[in-house]
Image (cartoon, rainbow, N blue to C red):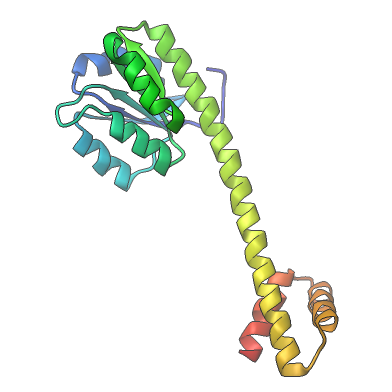
Length: 194
C-alpha cells in the first residue's frame, strides 16, 4: 500500500496453519499491525472481548463452529470489517445469509490477489466507519450540550424567576464574557442551583 499514517489491527481466525502462512505476506507491518491468529471461535470471541480489531479474517469452517455466526456478531457489534472465506460449494448459501450484515464473503480456493483486494476494501470500509463514528460522537456531544443548557435554563427560571429568553441570554452572555463554552456555563449553573 501507499504510505499511510494508520495501521489496521487484524485478527485471523483459522484452524489451518498453512492458511496463516499464505496470508501473512499480504499483511506487512507497515499497513497491518498487530496481526493476531487464533484457531477457534472460542479463542476469537475472547480476543475480541479484550481487544478491538479493524479487520477479521475467518477461514471457515472452524473446529468449534462454522464461523458464520461469529462473522455476523462482529459486523453487528463493532466497526470491524469481516472477510469470511468459505468452500466454493457453500458460497452462495453463506453469502445470502451474511451479506445483509455487511460481511464480505470469498469462495475458496482463491488466489492471494483476491484476498489482497478484499483487504483493501476492508481498509477503505474501516476508514468510512471511523468517519461515521467521529460524526456520531460529535452529534452526541452536541445533544448532551443542548440538554445541559436546557436544564440550566430551567434552573435559572425556577430559582431566579427569569423568563426562558432571559435564561438563554444569560447563558450565552456568560459564555462570551468568560470565554468558555455554553456547556461549561450550564454545568456551573447546574452545580450552583441544584
